[in-house]
Length: 155
Image (cartoon, rainbow, N blue to C red; front, side, top):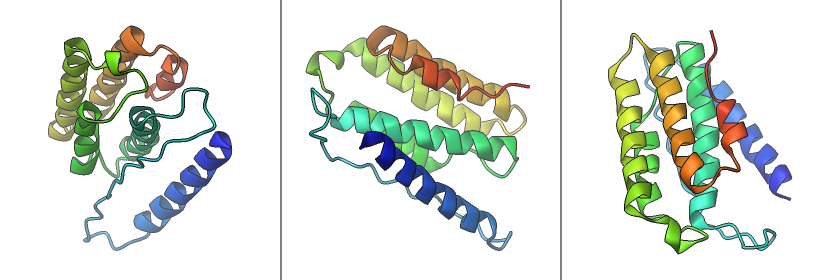
C-alpha cells in the first residue's frame, strides 16, 4: 500500500509540476507544501509524523533537484518551512529527539537557505544539502541512506 500511495503522490506531483512549467514565464509559481500527519496502521510500529514528513521531504528534494538541473528554480521558502517542522514532528521513538538531532536539523535548514542565496553554485550547494541529510541519518536512522544518495547531482 505504501508503494502504491507513493506512486500516486509522485504522479500527482509530476502532473502539477508539468502544468506549472507550462504557465506564463512572468508569473512566479510558489509551491505550497502541506505535511500529511496521518499515521499508517500498515507498518509494524506505525508510521510516525516524522517518518511521513521525511518521505515528503525526499519527494520535495527530488523535485528541487530537477528544478536545479533544468535551471528552472531552487529551494522554496515553503521547503525551508517544512524542514523546520522536523523539530516538532513526532518520531516513532521519542528518544530520537536529542540536542544532536536538533543540531543536525539546524544545519540542514541553514544549508537549504544557502542554496537559495547562492545562485551560481546550485549543484554544489544542493549536494551539500544531501550530505547533511546523510550525516543525520548515519546517526539516527541509517535505513534510507541508499535512497538519499540518489538525490545527489552528478556532473
